[in-house]
Length: 245
Ligand SMILES: [Zn+2]
Image 1 (cartoon, rainbow, N blue to C red):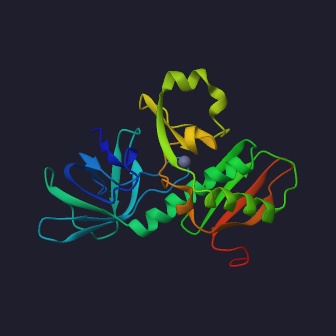
Image 2 (cartoon, rainbow, N blue to C red):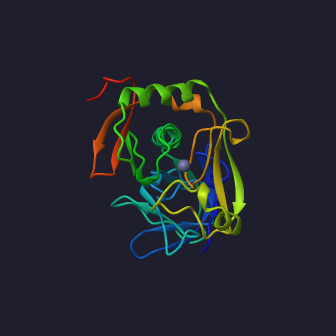
């Protein structure tokens, strides 16, 4: 059953109520609405727990899409109780983890501004994220860190605008990613915009992001690896340079 994905319009929603609409044989739970982000576009799905009326918890180890993006499956960890269809639950996202992912995800967008090469892959993580670029140039990681931190400190607004699938198809140049597909299939595509009037950047993306670049906090490029002649892998970490190897 299609879910009302509340996180698409409110990235800061960490809790909400919902009704169980399906329980799969493998334990996966579908709800009428959810604030749990489902794995996609390089950002891992949320973890957390579902609270039952009696106060007991169903711990969730993963959130993923079903057959298509209109289906979201909440996957309990081993040995959890199964809720009943029609049961009312209160959802609680593991917020410290999700907030780190939002900061990191936004940092990846900033990196794509500093490094304007086509993106060939990306993975957002709580401690480290990586972005692969189609580029052959050699670039100094401390210089990239300085430019990233300048964008963070300038505290640009980060906001969404929406375009239709057709508008996106007519403007393919706005997609920076070569093989991470924009979030098509919902009829509308969210554009993540950075800066007043999108002056810094705009990019189709279905992930979750912070609302001001200062929230990203202290980040640095820990490593730039050469992956083939025309591929460079950038690793972003939290903290000051030198804080991690
Ligand atoms: Zn994004």
